[in-house]
Length: 429
Image: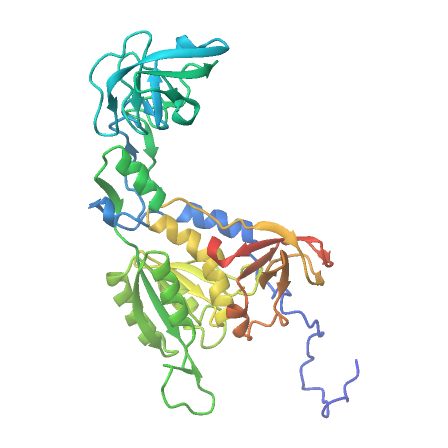
């Protein structure tokens, strides 16, 4: 070893380690948690944290069902016409050739049934949505008919049941519509309303606390000094939680002080169902969050084999689930999207659901080392995924430049333009 390149060496000085220039290198005695194992641990460790309530359909959008919903009526509730035309007994037009039917007086319209029997050899004027009268099982399109007001004429053959909707062909009475844990969305409201459901039992909105930690952090707009930075994480995460339909609780900025953090954790355990913190999740001298969880709570896992965001803690404080996210905004958002959001769905009463994305051609080149998942800020251009110019997580602008992430699994890989990569749009999260 060359002892004299930088400074004078003497026998009392310690030897430096060999330079590996690899921030992913395993520290002695530390095991990295693979991403798939993180997912399994989260699914097994978490359960519902919220109470239930019964709400009107108008308040159910975005909520998780706390019990299954069954139909108490068929849809359609009665056989009806799918078009405007003329209804009759279909067996009369089974064969090729002209069909002549006497036109009865009156008509069938939606909300105004024809309450008499349509006899053999006759037809009735019928409009879309009208109940099929007795004696009618088939409808011919009005544009295919000639009439003089006394009779109609058209050409067969016409399949029996043509242009009609059967009772219950969409939903049967007693059918399971949505299971427990399903998130209600606008089309679901139409389904529920169509069978007369007016109220559903749902889980209360999840209360998600958000806390930033660090002596260097300031509120945007505050007077700053050298070494200060403005807190970018809270505004991002509070808004992200609100967009998911959760109730956000802002715990502000906490100094790097164990006593202060302990009080905040105690307060959060009384006001929240789950807490997201940024900063202090690694193993440095001022990383008090992970230290507190380890000593006084329960620290489940940290140092995930992922880039960005490896120092992420997941623990419990007085029964409160705590996600200790990295302090870097890029890593904080990636860890929230990839790990925290599927877990929050479970806490809120929903099912575990990861954003899967889809394969698109790459518009970039990359040599990826094996051993960890990587998430690249990306956006689609002409159907190809281009990635942000710098992979450094200090470039916050890459988050808003991108409209999603490219997910690379833990295999080593040489990526060339037009190779297929998995792209996950932000909207999928």
